[in-house]
Length: 262
Image 1 (cartoon, helix red, strand yellow):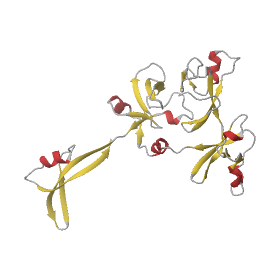
Image 2 (cartoon, rainbow, N blue to C red; image 1 turned 135 degrees about the horizontal axis):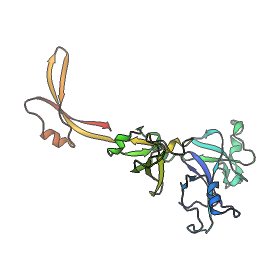
Image 3 (cartoon, rainbow, N blue to C red; image 1 turned 120 degrees about the vertical axis):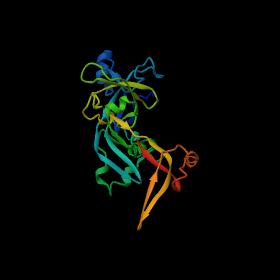
């Protein structure tokens, strides 16, 4: 994705700004100034003017969060520090009235006012963000992953492991899916810990659980007092297949649908 110069965006729960590359630095030094420079591999592409529509080379700078997110009228906002921040880039700036909508809330929320080089951004609650909260992931299991079980990152991106035995402290090499469906390389320990560690927990490997469903025939075994025992047989992909396969000799009760995760 090509970000405009000056554009502020959220990525994995953090905020970044696309800024033009400093002219006085060589290309190697410039990469070190970018927040997405990870062990020589960029997390975001289209930073070189050669590939950008505006012909400008850019870097991505991580922005500092100020305080905790606030919630007003069912929307969430985060205050961030932005060098030379201007009001018309703030989520509370009203383009129609040329006024700050936050003024209406300051009496009720006095801590919400802005200082120099501060502004608010809205935390978008899109379907993808909401879906991440519902992910039911399990800790990374090396043997299960080698057996072909699906692997993803902690924040829900698909991961394809292409090497298990790279020499060094990070033997696992994986291709991680990006938002535009491209992939980039990252390195992990045998426990699935991301090579850069620190605050990058969202990039650790996890096991992705898949919901499965099937049909089983239920049989009544016998009655003893008020207790009824049941016998279930194999799991079938459809109700029709299950019914065709029920055992005549048993006391058939019903064909029911079951769901599980693995």
